Length: 88
Image (tube, rainbow, N blue to C red):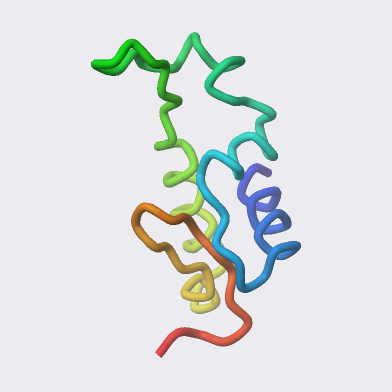
């Protein structure tokens, strides 16, 4: 179910990179303030949300989409986006 929510979120923003934080806030309704139970305290004393669940959901979504899974691209440090045409 979450896979399809992520796909819908990306489809509304075709061609634009979406950060993992934005996806997580939109799908789960969580931010670093409301998600402290699973957040980790970094060296500076700031809570950081674990964004690995987004990565896992995107991997599962790509698997479910089969060959069309390559339409979801990732750019390290930027986010993910849905493209209309497959990347070369």
